[in-house]
Amino acid sequence: MEYLDDVAKEGAQHVTLGQSKSALTANPVADRAKSLWKTLSNWVTLALEGGCNPDRTIFEMYVSRPVSGPLVDAFTSSTTMETAQAAIQLARDTLWGEAPNHAKRSEVASEIAPYVDNVFNTDQALVARVIKNFALTCGSGSPQADVEAILKTHPITQSKIRDIADHMSGIVKRRVDELLEVGKPAIITSDEFHTWYTAYVRKTDRDTVLRSHSKRPSDKEAKNHLPRIFVRQLDLIDLPFEDKLEAVGDYLMAAADRTAWAISGDVDATSFDELDISLQRTWRNKRLACKVAHGGKAFEEQGLALYTDCMDLKVAVEQKETPDHFIPGCLHRLADDLCIGWHPDFAGQLKPEKVA
Image (cartoon, rainbow, N blue to C red; front, side, top):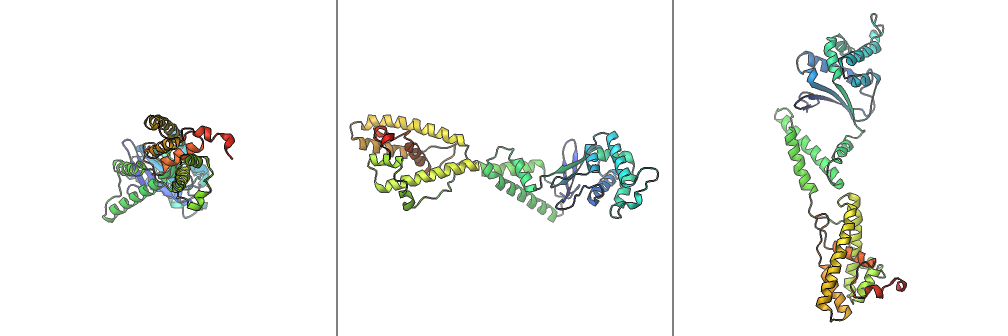
């Protein structure tokens, strides 16, 4: 930052010198824009004085929103010495007029004239080498959104991207300020940045616990759901009223969590289908075990034993621990669809024609 240029990137093969231009209103790369010609003039002077090797340097202008212009487009499309020389000739004809008279030269605005003169009067072979490696990079209009768009291509949970982008922007700014404060060049190595980035991603996006943001309903809200099938299943095993209200709360909170986690990207929606299949398989196994252990007892007691056993289940979702209410709530969801039940004859007791 602010060392070789506004921003520079040094790699094994090339150095990229970057000039960042504001584009809130005016076009900084218009044919007669001061920012364009001052930047080109500075780069030509830098190459002339040996400050860079134009053949191993990318000269990049970055603008935060899409912009263009006939001359800058010609510069950008130049990838050979021949096309670069043609682009320079186009620029000279546009601003100065055709040789030999250059009738338009006197019309060049005074604020850009020195920069234009420097570009057109310096060794044109050298200028062509600069133009050949010229690049215009345009953002979407929001640099923050552009950073987040890059992160979205990485294997990161979508809901974590904004936090990671904010953190990395902050840590880079802090490191740059620290270096400048002690008079050192603001240079950050790619290894250094990668260490910061991977460490924070591991910390932020490798959560082993799914966090619930759902609110437990009040008793009044819960009572509105007492007619549901999964609550009637609890009636069959004589579960106390307070426990039924708690079951309704678990059911509603789990439903809210499933929706929120799927929308936020914390959990892939298909993982809930896999969870339901796993819970039904476990329920079947526990039902058989319960029949062996409690087969001589009344149906209500058998159902209560099965229910109690299932409510103690601890099942991870995508290897992440879930809140205490979540698995019970998912079991109640399955019970509401009559996919599982507690009373040995729950299907017969609650067959559809008996449902109000």
